[in-house]
Length: 288
Image 1 (cartoon, rainbow, N blue to C red):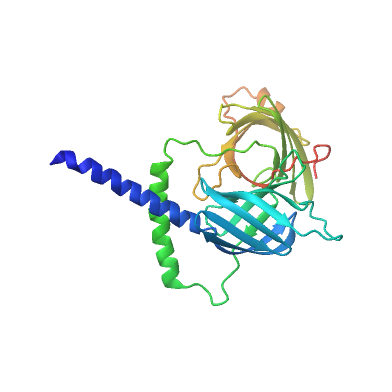
Image 2 (tube, rainbow, N blue to C red):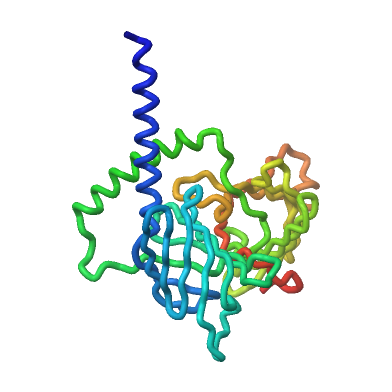
């Protein structure tokens, strides 16, 4: 009798995984307010037929498929003489859903371009004209819980998708942080923050310290003479988006005055968090 339990367990898991995948894939359907380079790109309406997604937006159309939680495919546009988007007539796209499933961040690569133009084709769910529908939200919350359990089971041995560190980040301690990851052994950073109408600038040099490229360690020094170590990694906090959020610590060096003190000292450690606002290579000449 015990031998018969395993087939039913496997069938049950496969059914639940199939149900979860279907529910996750349907999260992409509906209307989105989209922007490109901070400017409105109009409403994107996504529908699904079989495994194919079709989206329509002003002067354009896209076709895509659901892949590991993301939506990827091709787009086509009717371009006029006033077009300044840089998207061209057609190209490739990838949309990455945020944890709350109410917004996504996208990348696109126009036809004829060798590189992806990252991070700027973004979308958010429009607010309901009639407010929150309590029953619908309760059902969705319950479904989200089930999805998370199945997602953790299905992906327990899969590493999270990680993006290089290059880009612009908003942090809670160092203000705006710009990073250029030339390679895993050569990562440069610049930051600038304001306290009491006074700006402090700083520089960072460091390297990626693990094979998955999710951890970064370096040395910082600012215009006030403060220096130390920075250790950050892509965050596993609740609602953190892989490749778009980090957390870590700043470990400050002893000041010259502290070094002269003939007593045991403990280095100052400050927690730091950051969110990626762009994956474009930033201007590393200045701090702005």
